[in-house]
Length: 282
Image (cartoon, rainbow, N blue to C red; front, side, top):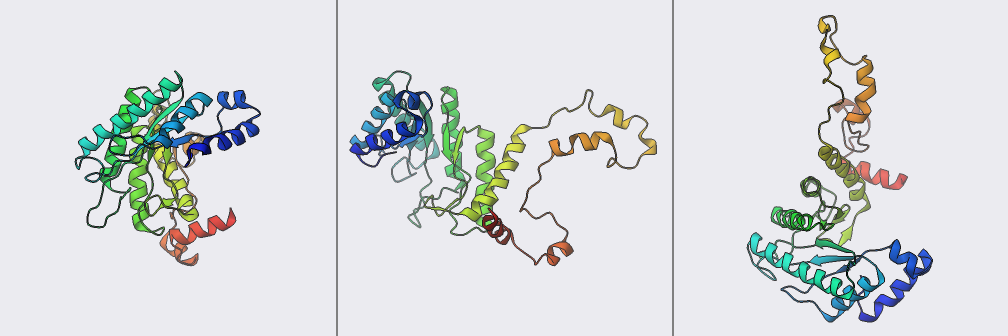
């Protein structure tokens, strides 16, 4: 999005030039503009004008309510959720008054507020709960949804980063969030780590596989495999295994699945080490 009222036009003009004209840009937008209310329950002149300009130009607006529990929104999760939805709905009204049918994404970047540290932990479970809740409301309203999930407040690509990112990615996937900002992010959304992005690519792959669910590949399920199985002791050589192995299972590239001895022979590298090597290759 724009950080100045007069900033929209040059950004729009550059996008239109790349797309081949304003009409083409409206039909196939090249960007999404974030628009953030000023909690609690206010929109600045800047963001209001941005919503209006985007609506009239056909550029999607992503509504990013950013309440902090106990600071700029109620301390309870439910209270923050109510404020979040109210702010986003007011933004939706602004866009539709500017142009009926203007594209809007129901998003946000709320956070739990850690009063001990004065920080806004995006990896806090309460933050993820708010994210999951408001995206369900957005889906109920038949709007595309957005959330900052699958990120970490850690300063380096460490165990905390994996923990917070993994939980967030799974929750986002199960919540059906349409647009996820977060992979690669550390330090309260303030930094992008290429090494973490490489790791997060595999975390996201696992999350996507999880929501694919368990499919019935055969009709009935593997019946022929078990008929007369008394003579077999393994499934490795069966055509059924060759047919479905790569379709049923994910194959990460830098997550460690080696035996201990082989891992030692490769230099006892951590996932951070392997991620750094992968970044250099890319």
